[in-house]
Image (cartoon, rainbow, N blue to C red; front, side):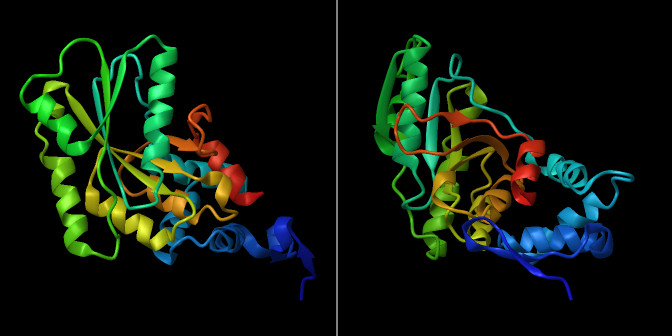
Length: 243
């Protein structure tokens, strides 16, 4: 039996040689350490196994790349951004970061709640080159009726086709991975922002969020307005998962 060796923050992993574990065994151990849902672990490993001759990191990056599809916010052209997500997910912090970045690029920025901001867009009262950042009220993810209502708000504002408002899902990396995956799937929004990567050692929720169909806009490592909205490449995430 292999020796047990300490990892960072007192985590442990059996120190079997990678060749003995095989790609499947090695990736399974790493992904389960990050608390990924079993179904997602299996999907990622199945895709990783198609990368012939790749290292584990390259194989995992290939599997992640098929699902992540990064696409950051265009802070110079965006006109309206509606942030949706569960309570405590970091929507207010993200709104402040978006405003900070847009102001630095020379944009005028307005912050509003969802009802007031959407009303201005619907009545064509919001004009000019300003950016409006709107924050919807948070919801309890275990309340399915509330989740359905917010999904309808994101899909039904009727403004995306006119270049007006884009709804973006905001979830926390410190949340349960199964919950995050279900939220992203239920909201069916085009992009997602993952907050709080500085608050957890596990990346299961992050992977569940950004491989659930929505494009990854940004991730955050801090709550302050001047803490960056960062981009995350599949290669970088693969390395973080395997370190």
